[in-house]
Length: 271
Image (cartoon, rainbow, N blue to C red; front, side, top):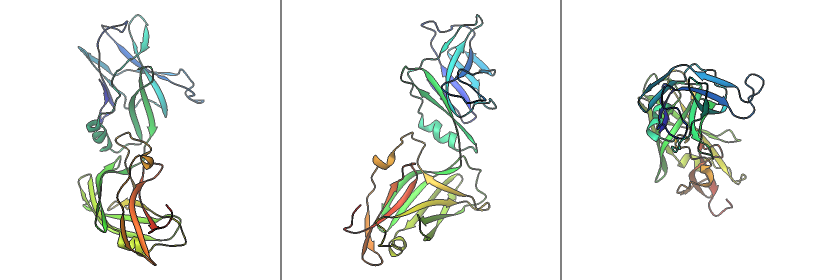
């Protein structure tokens, strides 16, 4: 098993076999690929905060200069030997992922298993967003719920859901309720249909959550489950409403970046 907790502590459950160290063990990170001028390929970062108790190893990663990109996790021993840490764990644990989202952060660390079964650490920059956990079409409205990701705790319970018409000047709002770090809201679809511009084949509405107090706006999206390319893998139901003019079909959809938006098209028109 391998995991990274919300405090950026790496945890491994190991078995001493196949040349891996059975006694005192150290860990290091080795840059994979082009690390740029500051961290060239094969650059290594020793992990100094390593503790072992039986088959359990923990290693603190917070504060290490881990640049964006992929890093191999290596074991080392007192004789100077080292090797890649092998794993059968794909590294996705949803409970851990949602706990990880709850802390403000600008860097995300993820564990992966490569094609040869070696443990990789991927580092990437992070920006706060609103993680969507549930989308449900309810008549002429869409019910949304989820949690704030990588953002500070909200100052009060009154947020605002904003739908902006992509490439145009349309903007609609709906109240959003914040419960701790969770959010939920109901987006009415009739105003979107009424604002439909028939000269455009598609009318896309991008969704944002405005936080109380700071006014910061978080884009709605779904990334915690590691399923990329939801645009081609997920389909939501649609509803038909009176538009201006004619009838309009409105449905939620994921963009190419796995953000959540709403799509409005003329009923009977091309998709």
